[in-house]
Image (cartoon, rainbow, N blue to C red):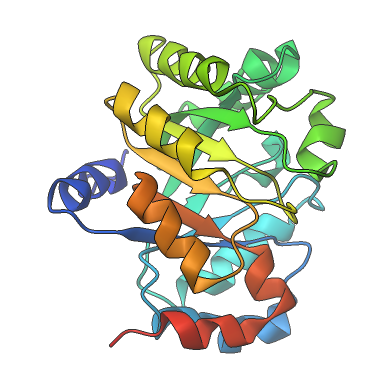
Length: 245
């Protein structure tokens, strides 16, 4: 039986109220379960509104174990951000059903989705179709390696905008602009601005954001949701900058 509470509806309502949403991304392969309670405590004391769980390459069952433990530690919505079908857990609240529309690998446009269909058919997860756009950031990322796709050049803003619009016209409920885990540079503010002006669905921005100034610039440029992961893996002191008042 499907869950009646809608993460997506809440997201739309928050955006309409002008709220700035922040998702903390946890990679199950990089987060030891013994460290999870302390990390969750810092998330709960921050301005974070969502927790995303996933990674490009994750050991089987690692996602299930992390989500199961995390549910007991936080009231924040837990949203799967899967790199593969093995990263699906019915214990989470929602799933970003990612289609890598910036690439031409059919496995990540539709193939993986077909593989997941049988397990999702009777799932309790809220499934949110998401147009996923990988943008060049100055270095090769794990997403690029795993998917065998080339990120869109950051200089070609119009092509990125057109790709986002195509995703919306295909029926995606979210657009996700991704610089990639460990990106040298975050998504340029001009790209965020022009994509936001052209699409009528919520815009998620992630990758390469390592400071409070970069976080605020993403919001000012038009991001509805900002995702931060690597910054906390490298420096948990960043939580001090995003504590709730």
